[in-house]
Amino acid sequence: MKKLLLSISIITFIASCVGAKKNIEKELNSGNYDRAISNALNKLKNNKEKKRKADYIYLLKNAFSKAVIRDKETIDFLKKEANPANYEKIYEMYVALNSRQELIKPVLPLHINGKKTNFSFSNYNDEIIDYKLKTSNYLYNNAKKLLISTHKPNYRKAYSDLEYLQKINPDYKDVKQLMEKAHFKGTDFVTVSMKNQTQQVIPKRLENELLNFNTYGLNDFWTIYHSAKDQSVNYDYAMSLNFRTINVSPEQIKEREIIREKQVVDGWKYALDTEGNVLKDSLGNKIKVDKYATVICEYYESQQLKTSYIKGNVVFSDLKTNQNIDTFPIESEFIFEHIYATSRGDRRALEQELLSFLNNRRVNFPSNEQMIYDTGEDLKNRLKEIITRQRFN
Image (cartoon, rainbow, N blue to C red; front, top):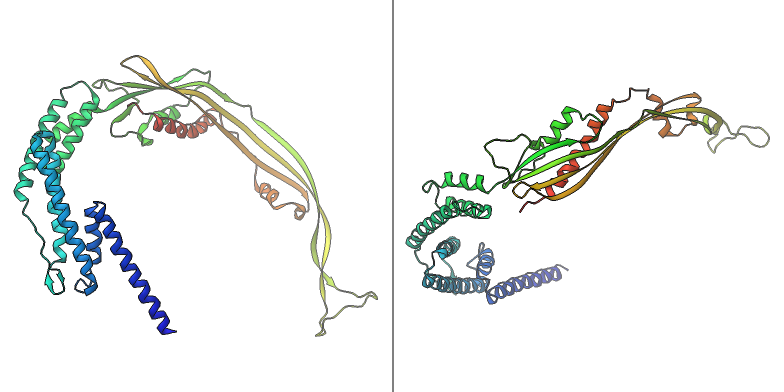
């Protein structure tokens, strides 16, 4: 049995090795050289001197050589085009060439059949420095050109270029200041207002919460909502929350009476035979049985009920064209319900769900203002969903 298990383990191990090798070969043949390199390196992290690791060393070297040839040919082509827009790509490819070497270095030296396998590494420091500077200059100058345009997409492109420039070349010239300028000019500013077209008074705290966009977590990087206008900002869009209907129902109390009857266990008695004698078990002990009784309970329930309903719409408009661009209906309902009850008789006749209401007492109905406020809690969630779906560009 042990030999059988050992044989199965060996077969499974061999199969996994063959599968891994084929996967690397597949990546290599399909041109996914870096993926092939990563997989081969993973196999060489441990026991790299084992004879069975030779295939992975060969695959690693092959994938590395092909990747280097491909990248250098691409770089040569991009240089011949003499287009400054290619500087960033050339820079990234030199960084990638260097990074690929650094991944391999930790597993060196590698040997196949006792012979050292040599990798043709190069020093790309000068090229990286050269093209980082060229890329920085190009992106900086191009961003400054984009910033004097009149289109927000250009400002956002400028910000993206400057953000990348800041990443590869921190503190280059006045990049941080230009990024702030690009972000401000590329941002859509939305002014928010609320209109009450109903006969009901909207609680001030609800109005404040609905217009407090800091609690929504909605401002994305390129869109900012202001409920209070900033005179230094030229707003692009407006959002109006319009209340058209606010209904609050009268206070209601619904009553019902239920009579319940049930047989319940009410103590015990000795079991008797047909002649009236007490029955005993095999040990001579008297046998006890449950004694049942019929109980009745009158249950009086009161249900306090009051509802409120808000309906309106959310209108988005373009302030430059003075046209509405989207309208969304919005509505919400809140139901106040409280149940309390009393009883007369034996409560054991009542269902469990009815018993809980016997501990309750009548409470004061919420005011109309509170009802409207509580309706607004759900309204905020619905408003957030609408704003999240809205995209201005």
